[in-house]
Amino acid sequence: MRLSIGVYPSEERVTAMLPFIGIVVAVLVVIGLVVGGVYLVKAGKGKLSIALDKGGYNCGDTITGTLDLEIRKPLEPRRLFVSLIGYEEFRERDHDGDMKTRREEVYRFEENIPLKGALHAGTTESFKFQLPTPAAGSLQQQSGAGWLSGTSLEVAGFTVDLGNRRKMIWYVEGRLDLPGLDLAHSQKVALNG
Image 1 (tube, rainbow, N blue to C red):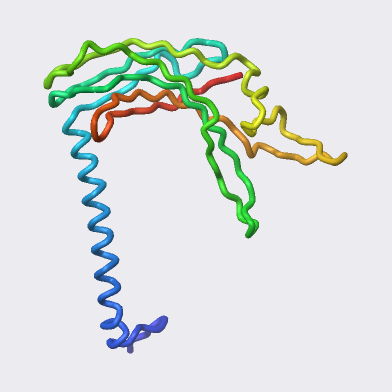
Image 2: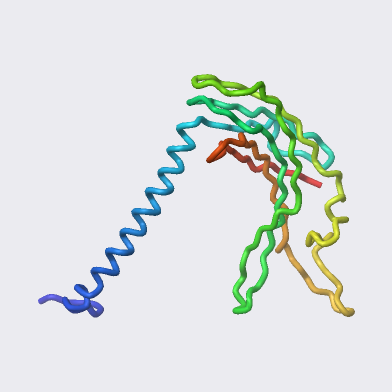
């Protein structure tokens, strides 16, 4: 005796769905090829990595670290730079009442690293860098950037609890600006303050 659970589609329905399934598979293959192609092009140029001297800093400190370049083919870079980027991440309800997370860049500081011209295949270079961080309290003073000090807001005499729906996320990013695809790497960093 064979028990069947659920309803299985008829042979005609399966046959009718085959073109749609073929299109979905073709789209997934194309996406895979594009992503793989981008990775291969970047990997063929070389590799850029960042090593921070510490994982966390206080506002007002200077972030220090090393940017390492491994060059696999001759490159003519436009510039090499390192950035401190701050994103405000916040959760809010959409028009359906569902919680959504959004991220908005609210801080960026870039520091150029001098290069001596073309980069040659088979070489490895290391560059020390220093990035200043914003002074403690300076970000809360920026109007229009969506910053709030504290976790509650008073509106028309009522206190609205914002909870922990807003937070800052910081990254140090290194980038070798090249024709075509850049080499880049970012690392999350804790910034207190």
